[in-house]
Image 1: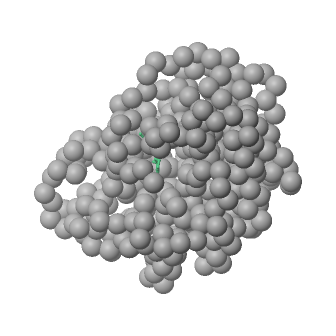
Image 2: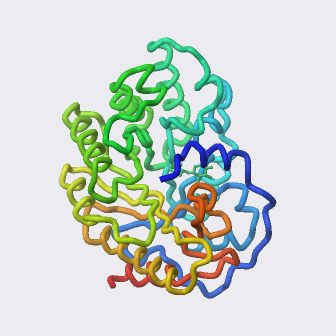
Length: 339
Ligand code: XIL
């Protein structure tokens, strides 16, 4: 696993020029194929100026997640000064196209502004900072963003609570506190804990499971668990059983950031293996009644974070760089229709 912090640093501020691509006209949509589940895509606001990109996002999917625009460094670049223009662009696009929005994310250790990471705040101050941020962001989107990743990646790869400024500054209570602040800010929003590497058995999934159990025991207002699902083409061990085990705690589960990376320079066989993996991920979600949605992390291979985050890998999404659907696209369609 490549450290997400490095990836974030590598990609921060990048974006390049927005091209203007043509999307193929005959792409059969994914939305509505499974009436029980939404199918979403992570969107970069700047790319909505690319007609082909915007057309595919708006016609194929029924949900969007702003890929970076709701992260703290964008929404509160200076203490108490909130900036919503970038995320508003995506949320407006979603409304115009009848799409739902996942809010990502309120409390995380990455993509935070300098003032927050380099300030020396007391515990009381940090709690107030977290509360004010959650309140301001959620109040702005009340009624327009139906669900939020309130806390992201709070568990490390060994299953312990991750050593973050939040844990150091507030203590483990920062997590239930964040959920309570979020519930106060928008009582009708669905509140998620979101993490990676949880879609398979192992110490990470055990750690997240324990955290979710303790949140529920403490009556924290937690509605769901997001499984990021950044994977390669190998079947994740006990994937469906893991989703089921979390759902049995009485929470919804969603695949929130799916991508399936393949080694650079691989050919048709790798794209078939990728398609099978996508189909497996969709089928596993469909097999679990409380698995309510699937979001792909990036529309197409040109705009995916994978090449920057996982050296030597790429081509992880459903569309190629020319916006043509890949074998994985048809596999997802078929899987959504039942097999
Ligand atoms: C990634 C974005 O895709 C990149 O554009 C950005 O540079 C770094 O963050 N887990 C998460 C997401 O929860 O927010 C990350 O998104 C990918 C890993």
